[in-house]
Length: 307
Image (cartoon, rainbow, N blue to C red; front, side, top):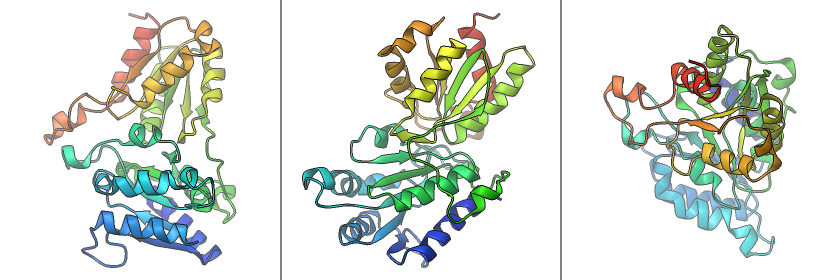
């Protein structure tokens, strides 16, 4: 099953299960539907009226035009109404680096949305993530931002029989250890998880056993899974395709520093991030702008003080 099929099947099942679930957004059912502010506002109003909209953006880069509806209307309404107004809505679409679409279509908004109280922010990696998290998001009473990697849409993953069930759900706020290890902890989300798994395979050839954590959820973040892993491995490297300043990796570093987990570290936490520039259009520069296996392996060697 491809990631695209996993997402489509999850939405189809939820539409069949609950008559209040609707889909609207850019070029849904009809071409030339790129009116972000309008349909985002309609979706928020529909959610307040009792429906459960799935609001689809062609890319989260241009969801910025609808940021007022996402943050000020969707995220804050429950708090501002003392819980009287519920906004059960899912904002979904491709996020982060793509291929050949340059700076205005390639930004990772994970850290932006994860900084906002009132939102739940998900960033799935494989098909089971996509099915379980999207279905949970649709059933959630609060606004959820579901960030998908365009580069993963066509990628195929094995799917368990359990994950194919129409009742399959993954809890929001729970990370998954994708690969167990004892020498270093690698933490990432979405596309970065695959890069970490490839790096872990390379590191194993060097005798380094890397544990790979798939965050799945950026807000709420499962910090306890990270803490327990670091207490076991004593080394931590975070990986993300977004920019380094105020990123998810920086947030993880802060949380580790603020708890007794810091006492278990044998070296400073290191981050592997996207380059601190707008995404270039040239293919060679584009590929050099977000982390690859070599970057992660080199960083692990650095944190482990291996020449």
